[in-house]
Image (cartoon, rainbow, N blue to C red; front, side):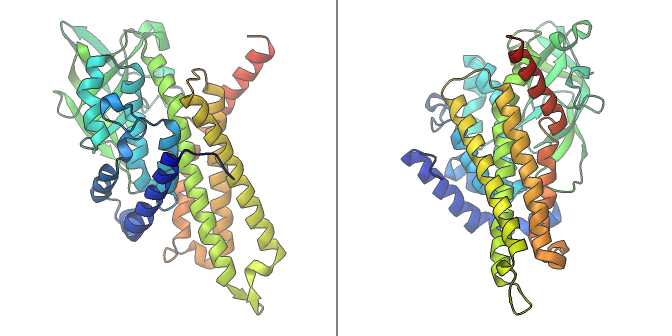
Length: 384
């Protein structure tokens, strides 16, 4: 379909596709197998300007928007959803500063993030606060010109490799979510360290770790917004970052479909290619239709956000669940088309299925996001 991308966006897509094929594809299996972080790919992405495609020009970015980020994430994820996270997860950690930071905070942090000199992460999830984000136990107590943070965040994408993190902590536990505040935490702050680095099923080229704060000292000027605005910062961030997760899922689905369609034309059974069998054709047709429907929703939402639309929680949740559920269906069917070969590490398709699963889980499980959509539907039906 023609999504009427600008000439600049079309060129961006071509560039991302070329780098994905020429640079990412040759090393994707190795990074997945070893579970190491792809610093050489970070350098490639930095040189291409991918970290700044959605950042305003005044902060050194390309002046694009969420759609530009979606395009890059989709194309990189067609080859490796894990390596693509170096860009997408840094965007998640950057959005709080971009959306809620003051001029000084943007001046201090955005240029390095745009240049890819530093990566970013987002610290919300805790051992006892996953879907129930309001149950966070990390605290931040103000003492003079500093806040003292104590607590542990876990399952943090880019954890241990990023240098800048947005962390949500409670400054007034009695107020629940209204007592949460957001802070910019730098690698090297006193009392800040990393805990367990996770060994994951998929996206193995992306690092996931605990962030440990033991009397961690953060300057007052590193608080994002006012005290008590932490969940506003977090929700505004997630509403704008979920199209990125959806784009990752979309890219994974498209990459798996590409492999399955190609394999189906070459695999011969009963004297002819399996693509000649109606059962395989129906599978490919469903896969293609689901992928294109997901792309249409993602691009439409990204354009809506870039037009200045503020309240997009319902649409953002829809976008993420549709794309991630599609990725899981498509990659599972792709493995089925490959048959026994699809189950073997010798073929790349099984990696796509492993990578797809996380898109249904992080940045809000699809079950929680269905609840979000339901609440908005009922509120609208009641005239709210």
